[in-house]
Structures are given as structure tokens and as C-alpha cells.
Image 1 (cartoon, helix red, strand yellow):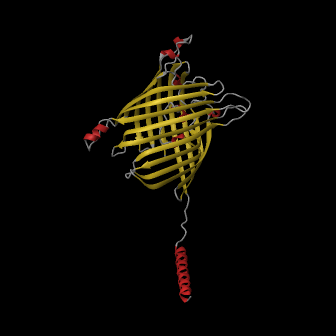
Image 2 (cartoon, rainbow, N blue to C red):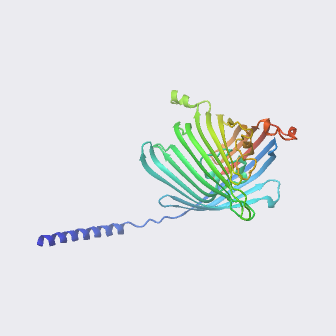
Image 3 (tube, one colour):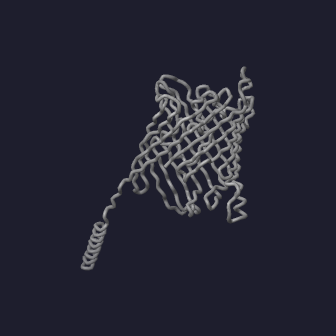
Amino acid sequence: MRKTKLFFILISIFFVLQNIDANNAADSIQPVKIKPKFIYKIDNLTYFDNRMFYLPYHKSKMYLGDRLTALAGIGLNKEGEHKLYAGVTAIVPFGTDFKEYKFLPMVYYKFERDFLCNWGFFKERKLKLHFGILPYREMEIPLPAFIRRPSAEYTVPNLQGALAQYALSADEGDILMFFEYAVDWRKIKTKTQRDNFGMILDGKFRFLTTPEGDEMFNLGFITQWDRLGHNLDSIKNNVDNIVMNVFAKIDFNLFYYMTSHHGNTFFKTIYLQLGYLGSFSNDNNFVNKKWNNSLVIDCGIQWKMISLKNSLYISLNKEKDGNLMPLHQYYPELYISDQFYRAPLYNKTELAFDLLNIKSIFALKAQFVMHYVPKSVFDYLPDNKNFKQFGWQQKITAQVKF
């Protein structure tokens, strides 16, 4: 009995001492005050985009103006980076009245955090989350023109919804795998307009990189689902469009690095990218379902400030209306891509000059682009003599961001 009492007394003394030590430790740890910091973003793009197109669905047009995005907010570091931005995007077409100007309010929350991991080659994970109205430029992987037309950068530059990004990196910090998922709610259903939203999922797998971080070989994919619904006072059909693209890209500088461990290559990049493009369109009201398969061939070369690249899209469907995107001509408000993808074949050649680049703060660029579609696209029109197979585009942009 005495031994039992002694045991409980010793146990009680042990827990009392432990409690005293814990209280002393808690008193010695002062709460760390985390002060929010002021953050901001400025992105100004001045653009000249002259388009000389002679197609029935792509008329000549010139974009000339300025797009300014100004954001300010607060940032907080607590179990990750928390940032809250608010601001405005101003789109000012030159030579127009004030009523033509657009002022688009923006507000979004951004969370960013790194995680350590030990999954074979992967040593670090990184997660980014965005919610609200944010610039499309927050997306890491550039969207191709068959997903989002380039002119959208200065006409509809913002994403309304959410964006999630996830990356897996190696010891040296090189990103080996990367994924993005975005939801953009462009229009809500009302009595006068149809609801319209889109979802984008893309990813990239980097297998070989140079010591400078340049990609030598990678695989990637991008897919988009767009929905055009009906308004409140109509039973118009819902229309869906799904675009899927998978590709493999190799930079032929890889062979130089395999045989030499020092020095710079003559060309900064000389690459070939092969891919598959699938487009599925579905008109629910008329049960009009169409699927198109296409081959995509991209190649490019860059020497110092000069780059030349070519993109060729070939429809593999044998039907007469086997366009790259089948229902493009019926629902242009659904497709955010360029109108050229209404054709069964499309080629784009681009010559670009990086005239000035100051530490990612200021960039001045000039581009000359040639577009080609086959004559069969407008052969059926009675006034087809007014249309041409080639279209020309001159573009100069000056961008400041910090």
C-alpha cells in the first residue's frame, strides 16, 4: 500500500514539474508580431497592332492604345505569403473619346507557400492560389492563340474567378513538373445575355535543362472547356467547346550540351515542337456534335535579339467542313481564339525583334506576322475575288512593369 502511495506521489510530482517547465517555457516565448507590408504592382502596355486581313471573317483592323494595370494592397507572411490586391485596369484606345475608355476594377487574394518533400527527384513543392479578378498574366504557361487570341491582352486582359498553380522542384530549385487550373466566369446569365464561362488546365514536364535553366526537352498539355448557356428569357441551346493539346518539344542545343560542358551556343534556341490538337464542339439543342483532330507543328530559332518561328495547323478530318474548330463560325462569342482556326489549315510565321530589354522592367518589341489559310475557305462566296489567302500584321509593344 505504501509502495502504491509512493508511486502516485512520484507521478504527481513529475507532472507538476513538467507543468512548471512548460509554463516557464511559454512565458519565455514572446508572441511574434507580424506586421503587414505595403505591396504594389504596375504594368503598362502601349501597343500598335496593325492587321491587314482580307478574309470574310477576319477584316483589317488596327489596335492602337494603352493598357495600364495599377494594383496596391497589403502582404503578410504567416505560414505562407498572403497578399490582397485592389486596383484598376484602364484601357485607353488612342484617337477616341473618353466614352470609349474602359476602367475595369480588380480585387484578388493570392496565397503562396513552399513545402519541403522527399519524393525521389522532387525536393520541394510550391502552391499558389488566386481568387477574385486578376490579370491573365498571373498564369505561368503562355496560352497559345488557339486557346486565347493575342489581342485579348489589351481588350479583355483579366480573369474573373480562380487560379491554382502547383510546382514540384529538384534540389537545385529547377521546376520539373508544373500544373495550372483556372476558372474564368466571363458573363453571368441575365435577361439580355447568355452565361459564358471557361476552364483551363495545363501542365508541363521538364526532363532536361541547361545550367542556366533553359529547357532542352519537355512534354506538356493544355485543355480548355468553354460553355455558352442561354439567358433567362430564352430556351436557346447550350453550346460546349473542348480543346485539348498535347505536345513534345526539343531544343537542338541539347546536342551541344551533350558534347561540350562550357561556352555558349550560337543560337539561343533552335527548337521543334510536335503536338496533337483535338477540338470537340457540341450544340445541345440541335444535337450537333463534331470532333476534329489536327496536327500541330511548331519550330523556331533565336539569335541574340532576333527570333523567327512558324506554327502550322493541319486538320486531319476528311470532311468538307473539317475545320480546326468545327462550330467556330456559328458561335464566335464562345471561342476566345483567333478566327483563323475556322479554316481546315492555318499557317502563322512570325519575325520578332527584342529591341530593348532592361532587367525585366522595360521591354520594347517589334513583330511582323504573316497568316495563311487555303483558298477553299472563301471559294464558295460570290465575291471571293475581294479576299486573299495571306494576311499581314505589324505589331510594336512597349511594356513597363515593376
